[in-house]
Length: 212
Image (cartoon, rainbow, N blue to C red; front, side):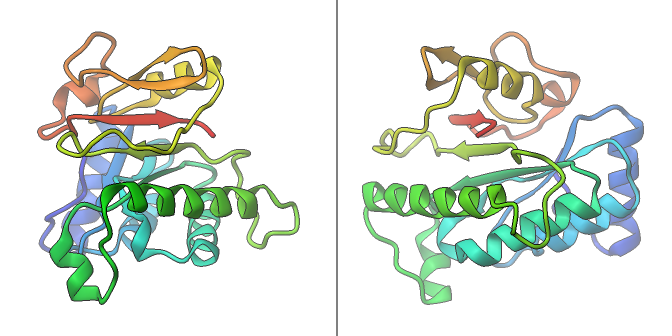
């Protein structure tokens, strides 16, 4: 369930508590200029919950330096007792990139950049010397693609078992089926949705998820 659009702090905290009490699997926060900062909001939600998972849905890879992103993810994972899910994508709103003074290259280049950012974040989080140390080993990752864009030229592959674990965990987005070790997006209206995904009001039309 999305934690966007709440008018003040008490309303946000109440929404997080309600999501957990009603049995939702995850609370999510987007990453857009003109919206609240995702890790700050998720940290607030973590403070008043104990079970619900905390997902960035999704970060724009161009907004983040990999070293700083790894620090944010690891910090929130420790504060929450290991409940973070890192959702990340290549960005799709040109006007936000222009406003932030960031490049907005063609989609193929954006996906290459996203793969590089994600690889470096994973490397840092897997390093035993990284401080802070995340609770989860590894931290679950969701790579999201907007339906109107061409298929990402970067191959994200994981084990079949990891894909199945991720499918059970997905909320408000398309689950994935395993085809060998390749991620294959499924319809968000397909079978196997959880209570939370059925209740989602605006699922992304095309995304992939994996524990990587």
